[in-house]
Length: 315
Image 1 (cartoon, rainbow, N blue to C red):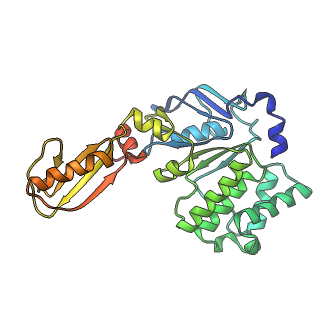
Image 2: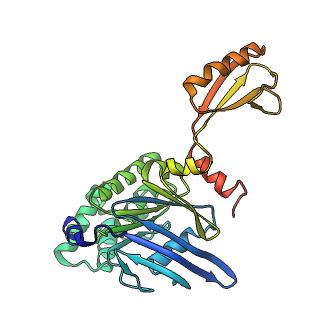
Image 3: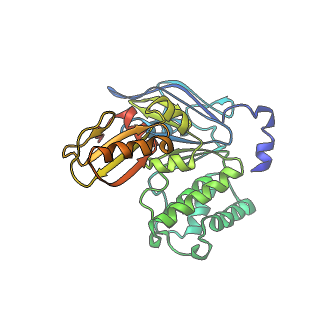
């Protein structure tokens, strides 16, 4: 992959992927309403949104599996046609797209041929993928005998055998155990370290916090916020910490604090925990109440997400 990246040095400043004002309708339903995002070179970008927000449709348009009604999609500085012209792109769907009655090696060989690999290049790519996924010792087993995590790893490998410069991942850790999740992100870290730009869609907000450089939140078919986690927090819920005091028994209301229904919980917001917490504890004690426990909650991607998209359930 390093040789291929070197050939692109003259366009180093260009975005890996640029989506502008994309519209996609299905009958009377507008799935994408002037949606846009930018995936920068060497970046890990999270694409988040509630169910039905348009994430999957946007990814399908980028991959050429759906044709936008309007808008522009550029990859590595060139405009993409409705289909084809995407050799530098890899896509891993949420659904397991493996042949259950073939072995891991046979699946990888089949998908390698789909990507145009043959001969020694195909053999080398398959051998690399089996080592990369940690499944070399199970290469001859049918994939229908694999655990969910093992299937996920092979599924990812099938999408990157051609060593793409840009990788789109749709919920790559659905239904896997913590060990398999860690292995998957170790695999992705290796690709990213070699120069692959990664776009990740996920409902696991902690994955976006821990694994991605920037975040785009989409709702009702268009992007409603984007930036680093720190930027999103500063622009929405603010940087204050929430301090929750659990009382031994119901206590009085205190200025600057909220309380729950039975008065056993007091909540305050603070800028500086070290400076402000002692004063809060003194005020509670002087009111006659006794603190049994306390929790400090920093602002999080979860609070940003709920702030922007609401608490209403999406089906």
